[in-house]
Image (tube, rainbow over all chains, first blue to last red; front, side):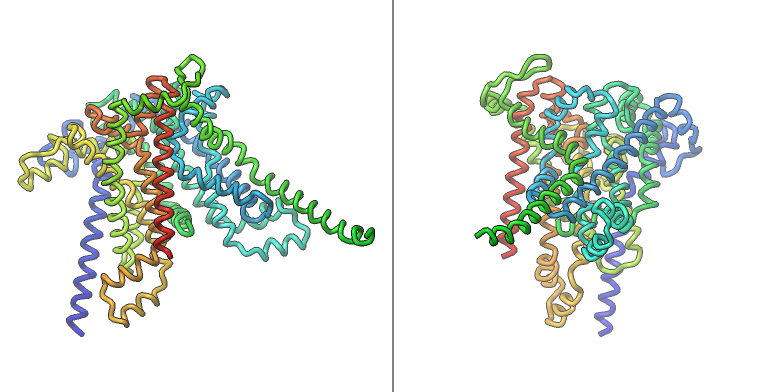
Amino acid sequence: MTENLVLKRIGKVLVYILLVAAALGILLPFYWMVMSSIKTNNEVFTVPIKWWPDIPQWQHYVEIFAKSDMTTWLKNTLLLSVVVTFMQVLTGSFAAYGFSKVRFPGRDVLFLAYIGTIAVPWQSYMIPQFRLLSDMGLANTLWSIIALQAFGAFGVFLMKQFFETIPEDLSEAARLDGLSEYGIYARIMMPLSVPAIASLTLLTFVTTWNDYLGPLIYLRNPDLWTIQLGLRTFVSQYDADYALIMTGAVLSTLPIAIIFLLGQRYFIEGIASTGLKG
Amino acid sequence: MLTTVDTSRPPTRRRGALKLHNTLQGWSFILPNFIGFGILTLVPVIMLFYYSLTEWNAFGKATFVGLENFSRLLGDSSFWTALYNTGYYSVFHIPLTLAAALGLALLLNTGIKGRGFFRTAAFFPYITSIVAIAVVWNQIFSPEYGPINQALRFFGIADLPGWTASAQWSMPAVIIVGVWREMGYYMLLLLAGLQTIPAQLYEAAKVDGASAWQRFRNVTIPGLRPTLFFVTVMLTIGSLKVFDLILVMTNGGPGNSTLVLSQFIYRKGFEENQFGYASSSAVVLFFICLSITLLQYFWNRRQEK
C-alpha cells in the first residue's frame, strides 16, 4: 500500500518535470524575442548567451516608429481586423441560424458544401480567386482582404454548433408569442450565444491580424500594408539590426498576446467546440 | 370526387406554401454569407479546373490546351522536388505533432495543478504571427552563435547542423518550428476529446485489473477516436498545404531544399504569371488533399465498426 503511494508520488513528480520542461521549451523563443529587443546588436549573439542585457535598450521601441511605417501598418491591420470580425460574426451567425433552426429542402446539401470547403486548401484556389477579385477591381485595395476573410465557412460552422445546443422549446415558445424568425435570432439566440460570439470574435480577429498570405498577394501599395507584411519588409531591410527586428516582432505580437490573455477562456472553448462532433 | 378534391386541396396547398415560406426564410438567413462564400470560394474552386486546362499568361487570354499543362508537370523537375519536399514535411510533421499534442493532452488530463498555465503556454505559439515566429527562430537556429547550436556544442557535438543555412538541415528546422507552433492547437482539441470519456470507464477498467497501457489502449483510444480522426484530417491537410511558414523562414531555400507544392503554385502563378500552369499544379494539390481525406474517412469508418 505505501509502496503504491510512493510510486504515485514519483509519477506525479515526473509529470510535473515533463510539463515544466515542455513549457520552458515552448516559451523560450518568446523570452529570446523580448530579451533581444532590449539588447544592443552586439549583445544579441554572444558566447555564452547573455540572459539579460547590461543596460536595457528600451529606446528601440521609440526608434522603430521613426525608422518604419509602423503606425500605418498597425492602423491598417486594426481596421481590417475590426471590419472583418464584425462581418464574419454577423453573416456567420445569421447563416448559422438558417442552417440550424429553419427547415427547408436542400439545406443539408448546402451545409455539406460549406463544410467541404474547410478541407479544400486555400492555396489550391488562390489563383482563380485572385483573377476574380482583380477583375472586380478589388486587388490592391483593403476591400480584397475584407472580401477574403469575412465570409469564411468557419464562423458558420462554429455558430451552428452552438445554436444546436439551445433547446428548440425556447424558439417554439417565442413563435407562439408571435415573434418572427428574425426576432428569435436577434432577441433570443444572439443574447444566449454570447460565449460563442466571443469565441468567434477573438479567433477571427487574431486570424486576420496574423494573416500574411492574403496581404502578400493582394496589397502591393505600401500605404495599404498590414503589420505582417510591413514587418517582413522591415526584416529584409534591416537584416543586421537584430535587436530592432526583434522589437518589431514584439510589437506585432503584443496586441494578440494581450487579447489572448484577457479572453483565453473563449479561445479555448471555441477551439474545443469545433473539434467535438467534428 | 369533387368533395374529395375540395377537402384534400387546401391542406396540401398550405403545406406547399409553408415549404416555400420556409425555403425563402432559410435562404434569407444564409444569403448574406453565401454571396461572399459562393463568389469567393465556390466559384474559384470550379474555375480552377478550367484554368488548369488552359495556357494563360499575364496579359493574354486563356486558350484551351487540354492536358498539356499536366504533361508538362510530369517533366518538370522542380515540381517533383516540390512534391517530394511536401511529402518529406508531412511524413515527419504529422506524427511528431500528433505525438507531442497527445502526450501533452494526456499529461494535462491527469488532474495536476497549474493546468491552466500549461495549457495557455502550449497554445500561445499557435496565435503568434508567422513572421515574428520566423524571425525569432532564424536567430535561434543561427549556426554560429544561436542558442541551439551553443547547447549542442556544450554537449560535445562537433559536427553542428547548419539549420536554415544548409540544404540538408533546412527541412528539419522547418519541421521543428511547425511542430512547436501547432502542437498546442491540437492538444486543445485532444484535451476536449479526453474530457468526454466518462471516468467510470477508467474506474471499471481499474477494477478489472487493467494496466495503465491497457487502459490507454482499450479505453482512451476508442473514446478519443472521433477527435483523433478530426485532428488527423486537419493535421494532414495543414501539412500538405504548408506554405507561409516556409515562405517566411527559408523562402524555399537554400536551393530548392524546402520548396513545397504551395510555393510552387505561388511561384508559377504570382511570380512567373503562368496562371494556367500554376492552376494545373493547384489541381494536383486539391486531389492529393481530397483523396487522403477520403481515405482517412473510410479507414475511420471501418475502425468504428
